Amino acid sequence: MKKNLILLHGALGSEILFDPLKEHLSNYEIYSLNFSGHGGKPFSEEGFGIEIFASELEAYILKHKLEGCSVFGYSMGGYVALHLATKTSGLINQIVTLGTKFSWTPESGAKETSKMNPELMEEKIPAYTQVLSERHGKEWKALIYQTAGMMIELGETPLLNEETLSAIDIPVSIMRGDQDHMVSEEESKQAAIYLPKGQYLELIDIPHPIEKVNVSLLSIELKNHL
Image (cartoon, rainbow, N blue to C red; front, side):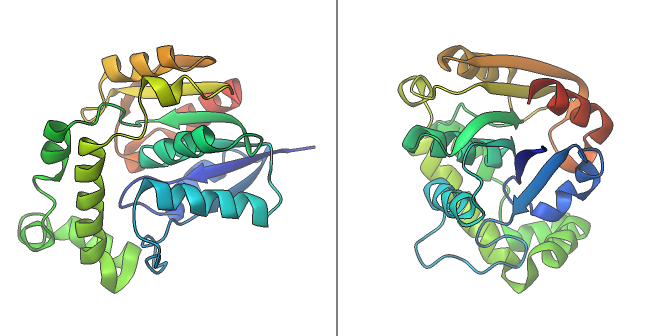
């Protein structure tokens, strides 16, 4: 019987970015979803952010009867999965993250959002904003503003810390690419230490953007640790 595996995208991403990876994971029953505001999915009336996305993940698991599933969360997706694991038990049996940022401070929040101005982005990086428009539809600018606000909020009040991570009593693998310039080795290793059943794994020649990740290598690591 195939193991159920849910794939969770990162900020400004969508489930379509996992299509190349899915081709390498035929030995799993694969599920994925778009968080509200992403991939053309309407924004939630409940708000925007990690807690909202965690509630959406919980609802998705219950709707599809996936209790006891494994989760691979890329970047923000890993943060969402871990936050849900701090709030519930039995829904998720195991989590693997890649490129998830744990060290959120007012300074890091300001740094990550300093260039998240859609009008300026259109001028400076038009090819990327065209991708965002195609990926998310007409609300792509609103998504950037909302994401920036979420990061500022995380900087002020991180949801994952020593106390919350130490309460997650399921196996968690914290993966980081050695070419990731957004997420540090130090913060990733520290998160793994806080987790009772955590481990840190560094992947060679892997940058932060999921579009640039070697999916063959990633799929091998997932199979080894799920």
